[in-house]
Image 1 (cartoon, one colour):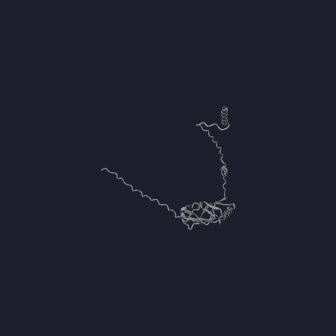
Image 2: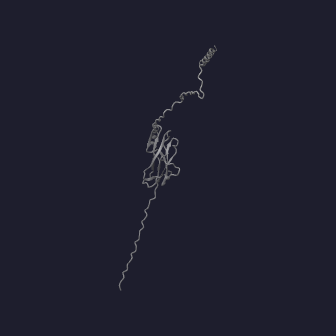
Image 3: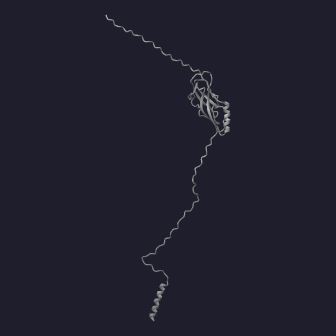
Length: 223
């Protein structure tokens, strides 16, 4: 009877060990492997700014060419204060008002006739602007320019030598150019210089050489 009770007790102990469902005891000196979570891939959030647009070179527009007219003779008036070998002739604009946006650029200067005087700007005092290259416009049309000359020969006739200045008119409109051209043709050039009587050059007399005296050679006589 005692033997039967002991067997039943042992069976009870064995059943209690296997029915608990617990995990097997860990072996000393070993650790369970750790599990590391793999990070999820990150995606860049789109920015609110649009991508830069490709640069396209701007198309160059053709330059606007203003209408212009050439004048063989600018409408100028004036002249020199007095007749002299060296003179400084003043030239003033004579064709009235110059429209806004219009310019009158003075060009080359020549003299008619051209054999009595020659151009020499040094005949004008310092500070007197020369006419060649000077520009008249609406704001300065009353300002004069100056042409210097020097006389190089006498004139057969007592006449004034004309100062003729070319000009180029550039306008905002064709109508402005036509208006200035019409006024210019009515005036022409009224600038002149008067010659003086240059002293005549008397030729220097050539000195006359006197002949050298002849020497008489004596002939020795025998005695």
